[in-house]
Image (tube, helix red, strand yellow):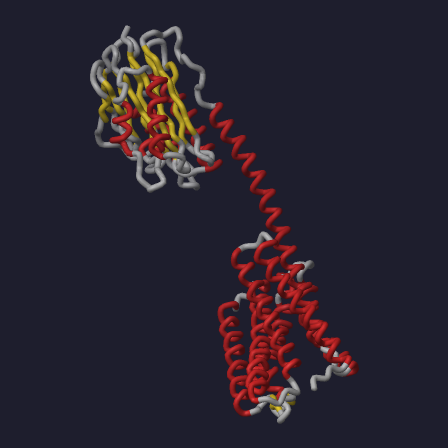
Length: 482
């Protein structure tokens, strides 16, 4: 006949509550908390192990006193799993303590802890067949053996290591989580002392459950606070990047028509920024009454440093050209200036030209930039390819080649950054210069603004909503003659 004492009933209630708490904790960690994947997996494993420890202990309590052979096999199996789970819990807690401590010996101590766990498993496996640590009588009641202390040897070793880490690296444990670690270590010890007085009530299990839940809540709350702080920081940085994007765009000429009093030329330019602040820029300006300066450039890198480098480069190039220097000489001067104290290692690819608005004759210099496209009146856009000079700010003290070109009335010039050719669709295919030329030549006689709109439409059609990773910057000039 199955008989349950009042102490057994209290234990049953404690264990049942513990199982429920572990189950809820697993669900909360899995679905209710915004934790990293690594932290989520750790606490899932931790509470699952605690759940198995309590559940197997409950099964042992219920099976005791049943003298059948099947009950004997079952009680020995759940007892073995209970001891394995207790060792695994100690190992998982030690791993957590070691991780938080940021010890310089983490790798070697990880190996030591794993060896301690393997030792625990071996001892319990031997005991399962020899009765080294525990035995069962004919009624399948559990009894400790002479070697019972060996079942706690590895656990005690890991506990001492935890205490050492908490003391040795106490400054690495913040004030919120340090007490939680000490409570998890000390609560079962205190409960053991009380249990010696109270008798059969399983205060150790109760203390372990409470301490484990408290420790996990404190750690997860601390991680959540850090996550929230990171979100606030990200939001602030996002707002600053948006402001930087607006400032960057405001520095570029955006009033069109650009030169209403100069009928010889029509110019239109645009920059479609990616999510981050980039280093693309274009510029056009009068060098003097007869010449216009044209610039298309792309700074390496992204973010605020690239944007600052862009603005410095733009000002330097414009000032050199307006001081009367030719494109090649202007880039040479700018290159020497930017190479001074260029600790960030940034550089800028540049296509720059000066065009005589009366004759259509121009001089261009290409410092590692994309090939321009020119369309002759009545013809189609074609790339103008020649050997580039190195990018500006890449090599100090170098010269930059110059190339002459001439536009006749009705000719058009199209320059762009690599964001056009490198626009990518969902299949990771590049838009490329061939598609760019195909789009340009759908309506080759279009005015500059329509040309840029047509290219942008072609890119959007190609990428079909895929995320843009680079700025798309373009400039088109139509020469009307004079």
